[in-house]
Length: 415
Image 1: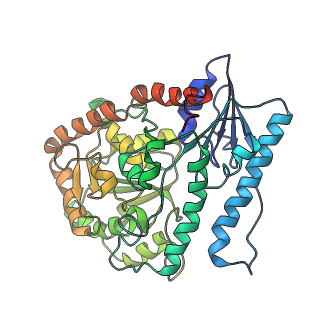
Image 2: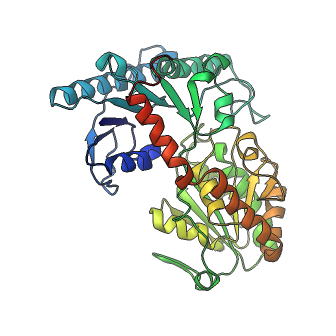
Image 3: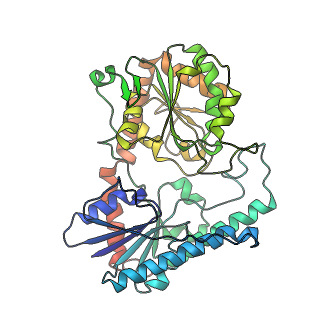
């Protein structure tokens, strides 16, 4: 069979299913993306690049900018599909990540080809991420902007034969009339790769290029794609003065890029990292706070494996892979008591839950984890067990692959 995956980033959520399908010599697998990521290679998966340089006109309607970009991406996706067909590659199924627009015209380019949509989020102005901060006011402009974003997603919901999304919480955000078209299937965590270290290996300490923490026995970690309020970066930083004061031997490692992936940049300009460092200027112990930037996968795993207290905070939004990867490594987890987290973490059993907005609660939980490692051991084991039983790649991958194969065979056409 011939499989076409479409995602702006390679390989993203499709890494494992694409690799598994490509293992069969009877299959041809093409992955279309805008960012080819040369450091990522999957055996027998052919990468093709597509994209557009379109920018919405400055005199266009401000509520149409997002939709116009999505349409431009959709046009590029359409042209890519037609070029593949002309080159002799007509896919039996297309699997595409929805929301960017790239899959908007897939059914027009390939009217006889089943389309499996991968959905992460449906935007609601109430009850989730928007307006979660009591200090924020949801404006009419915001509400209208969310509808234009949802228009792109609704297009794909209508076009797909079946959709996939990773958690029950994320599924609950979609209109009820579409939910019977959505299969809740997490991508899966590679629990062999993200596994706890032995006591001997942990004793060696963490050494990264340019940063030797081998002598550090109390390591606090925070990992994120971007440093932003959506992932509780300001609250984490505000917890540092107390952590550094109460745990004078502790070092803090912040993994992630100095950018905003979700939400807005600071009103005063600059980045959230710069804003928070300015607020903490003069705080004793800040020399023990290290920013690594983005890390290669192997080094990122080492950070998690050596952590003595990993902090994961999120608004009621998409659940990050990083939380499950940390749990798979058996890390003492301190996480926000928000809906996506509470679907996985039970306070006192497989992690500690804290008020998202309380820097004191975050600091107290971190200090508790550092000062009572024996008390954390049962929670660490339960965290690992949770991922093994509910999110293990080994358990979930066969079903995720079968969903795509079933779609290719026309089993969801009745939907």
